[in-house]
Length: 208
Image: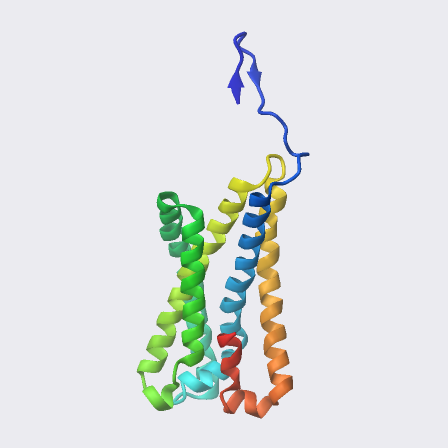
């Protein structure tokens, strides 16, 4: 807002009706797509809790395996606010774009490593410890990406349409959940329930 010579406040020009620039479209598309994959990676773990528990908490009962896996999932959720603070500050210093790329890389790498991580029968107690550590990295990355993506879009969206375009970040998070469910269902249908749970095919959704 500016003030004219006569002291009357003037509103900034309304550009909400102008066409979007290629740069604005690119930012909104990339941020939304990145959010889809971030939430896909995050939700896979919880969706496969029963299978993951069997692999990484083998000495425990079936119920305890499931509970421990959900606690590992909850650990990722619990650190999200810290990720928002850490990467929010980094975004202020180095820029949203580079911070967005950092969080995407951390999330993707952590998810991929979970897909490769040997289970309890191979690595013993180290397996669940590393698993939980990777979940914490996922939570930090998601906390940083989610708020950062919304801010990044808001900074580049046309004036008067910022609320509309930042809402895409919330919508694409839901798309990530459904994509995770579809990939898991498709893999189970393709290889069969027994092979999926006992022959390592459960790892495929983490590696995609």
